[in-house]
Length: 408
Image (cartoon, rainbow, N blue to C red; front, top):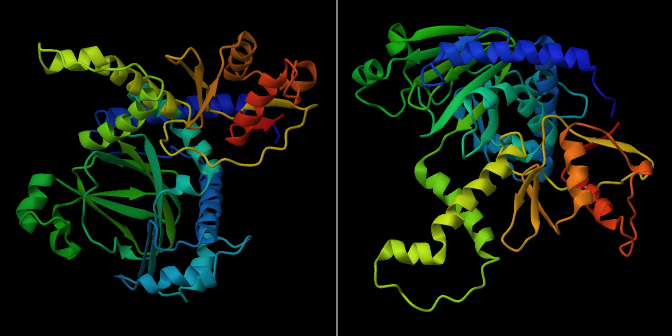
């Protein structure tokens, strides 16, 4: 893979940071609706369209057409179309628009696919890079980020006016080619007009009370979870939504419980007597509070290592070139946590690599995190398990298998 032009990347990051700052200011920190023009460039829109096509092909190859996909034909959900995907998939060099016209025989359709991170590590890398100024400025949600996309020429969103799931704030990137009009209602006004309806399909009846936002390619609109909204898409276009998942408290607790289970694995001390003093004394004696802090550290490290996305990358074959030079893919970074057993947990792309404490490994991780390229021919690295350089070989292989490395 060729290294991108650094000056271009630096300029793009400066512009990107300014646009995110503008969006955060206009939304008062994502707590109210707001829009910013041209957060994405034309080339970035084209890149995301290509990656969405790649994700769609990967989704079809999984052979599970009902997982996270909703298909609408002439305004009605049609599950038969899901199964047709397996018989008539998006071809390798076919655009989303051309495939949509062919597959749906030019009938109005809506195609909504959730969990894009399940199907393309590349789209995660691209969005993590794009959204890095957001996380740097606004912070990272403990339930992480997730991606979905809408495409079609379905008119109003087929399921009508609605709002997001609790704790999931939406950031919609419009990729075009046609414009989209996004309508947003004041919550009290919407409830008054609809009698507190959870969703409302007769859009025209309440459209007079909505605020319209006209989105062109590259524009971004943010809307918090409580805001009722609907999109109007009369001509084919594609939009991608980044879910900023603050999430319900129970959801975050469930994520922390998973990390606690890992923390507990190294605690083999016996506990046989219940203290008389009370419940908190039991927790303190068990080290439960301290363990909970460790669980939070693990969750944060897992997220930071993967650009804010909770779903870990797919493990892949990594044919390492022992004469090659490697560096970490932007914006991923290796997070290190010391374990109670004295070993070190290295988190990368959401995966945990547990290794013995080793100064050579610490030095190598530092070089990778500084975006320095590692020349393997000049590094004491050896695939022989009995050689002192095997620990570095093992680490590079395992990082490479997460998809976090590329050869310069």
